[in-house]
Amino acid sequence: MKTLVMSFVIAATGLFNNAFAGNATQRFAYNTETDSTGTEMQYIYKVSADGQYLRHHLQYRSTYDGQCRLLTKEILRWDAVSAKYCPAYALHYAYDGDAVTVECALWSRQDQAYTDVREKAVYAADALGLTYQAYEYDAKADAWCLTGEHEVDAALLAER
Image 1 (tube, helix red, strand yellow):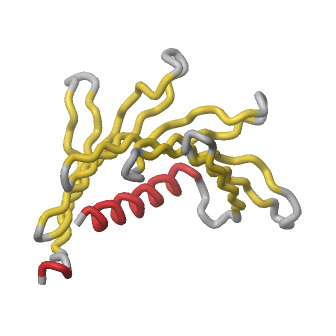
Image 2 (cartoon, rainbow, N blue to C red):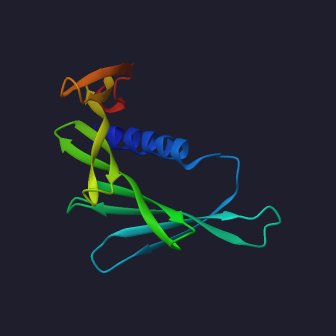
């Protein structure tokens, strides 16, 4: 059941990142590194139209817990003026039994941290399938507002 939840979360995260990355029809090149702390860094480069040059685009920094579960995926965008990657937003993952909560936090220049949490999604698995709930934060009401909900009826093969 946890594998089903994680597969769905990874697929949803990929779609979410593609939406923020821009035009998916462009060609990209990838390079992945892992440092001594176990943090995985993936560099995404745009390939020029003639295919001869790579241009800086994004950097993903992923951290994992002791069970190899994704905890944070930080997305940094290339800033040509400063010639470095600058924080854009981060996805924070929290695990609670058969549920996974993913929060999207924007970078706050004032706080120098990912403190601007505006959206979250909750994926929960049960014997009948998978439930997805999307929330947006309403600062005026200081509360999370449900913006979408979907339930997939897909009984697990192991239980049939």
